[in-house]
Length: 169
Ligand SMILES: *[C@@H]1O[C@H](CO)[C@@H](O)[C@H](O)[C@H]1NC(C)=O
Ligand SMILES: *[C@@H]1O[C@H](CO)[C@@H](O)[C@H](O)[C@H]1NC(C)=O
Ligand SMILES: *[C@@H]1O[C@H](CO)[C@@H](O)[C@H](O)[C@H]1NC(C)=O
Ligand SMILES: *[C@@H]1O[C@H](CO)[C@@H](O)[C@H](O)[C@H]1NC(C)=O
Image 1 (spheres, rainbow, N blue to C red):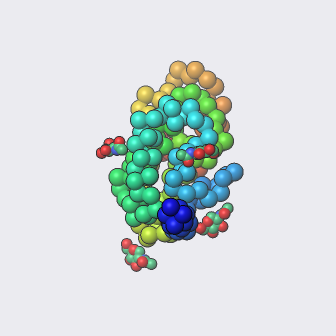
Image 2: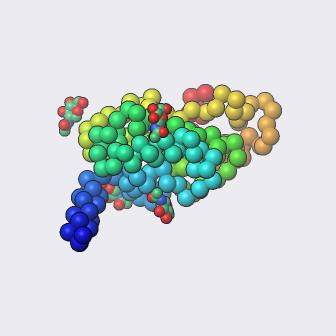
Image 3: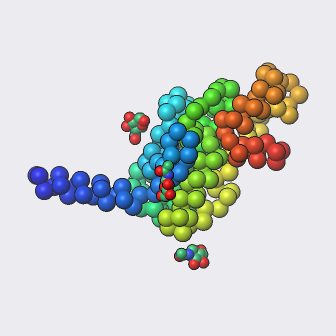
């Protein structure tokens, strides 16, 4: 029994040594893949449980296999979770201090970790967040909230990636 426990502990340690390390920055610094979607704003995970539970399940299935974590199906699932959180933050006009929540920057960091760890270049199209087609944003005509406030909030919350998206419209 004890040896099994020891073996398990060793496996856990070994896993931590090799698992993908994602530099999401902000208050968190580096996180592992299994923590990547565990955002502090739990309402986002509740709202997005379809996408995020799926992505989390796939991350857990990959465990410490970085090839698997960086594979197209895993990355696509993670992006759809992030996309849902992104939409939810915008829809609720909410703020998140968690650098992982609905963040294009976090996805870019994930891709960077894949390149660094297993030399997999994740195609940009797999990690691109888009604004919902029905989003009545800063460039909309009928604004529910002052356009500048929303622009500043989105820019502050979501970082450079979102600004890039806005400027591409
Ligand atoms: C995150 O990890 C990278 C490499 O794995 C390391 O260079 C960097 O210093 C780490 N950052 C923090 C904040 O620990
Ligand atoms: C998610 O994060 C919280 C606190 O940051 C932690 O208590 C919890 O165990 C984490 N859940 C998973 C599945 O890692
Ligand atoms: C996640 O979604 C993909 C495609 O949408 C599906 O093939 C897969 O079975 C789902 N995985 C889980 C654990 O629900
Ligand atoms: C990484 O992959 C690219 C092509 O995908 C290859 O040209 C390069 O040599 C690889 N680098 C390493 C360090 O394996």
